[in-house]
Length: 113
Length: 110
Image (cartoon, rainbow over all chains, first blue to last red; front, side, top):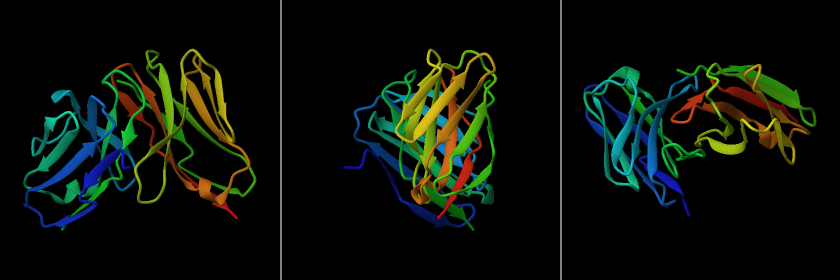
C-alpha cells in the first residue's frame, strides 16, 4: 500500500496556466509538507500543515497556494505558471509538526514550457 | 536559521569499497539528523538517523556518526553495492523544521 501518494506524476503545461498537484497520505499522520526540488537536486521546504492548519510558510510566491481539506490531504495549486516553476515537487508527511521522520511521496515532475 | 552543508557533491567508488559523506550544521539547537536516499525517479527515503544524545549508530552496512562539538555528522556505507547508487541527503532538525543538505550523488562502479 502506498503511504504517501501524489498525482499526477508528470505535468507538462504552458506558461501562464493554472495547475494543481494532489497529495494523500494513509499513515494517519497529522502533518504534511510540500517541498520543491530544483534541477540541482536541492530540496527546499515550501509549506507545512498540521491538522489542516498552516504552520510553515516559507518565502514562496503567492502564486502557490496550498489547501488541506482534511489532515490526510494536502494539495498545491499554482497560478500563472512561470518557467522557473519547473521542478520536482514532493509531498511528505510526519506524525506531528515537531516530531521527526518524514515520509516522502514519489514526486511530481512539473515542466513549464 | 540552520545551514547544512554537505560534501562531496559527487562520489564514485568501486563495488566493495567504502563511501563516506559528510555534513556540517550551524544551529546548536539541532537535535535530530536523518539521512535520506533518493533513487532515480523516486522520493527520498529514510535510511538511518541519529539523535543528539548518541555519537554513533549502525544498521548493517550503514553507519552514522555525530560530533556535536564540531557540529558535523557523517554517513558511512561499507561493502558498497551497485544498488547503493543514488543521491543521498543529510538533514538537521532544529525542533520545528528540517533543513536539508545539497545532496551527494553516489555511483558504485561494478
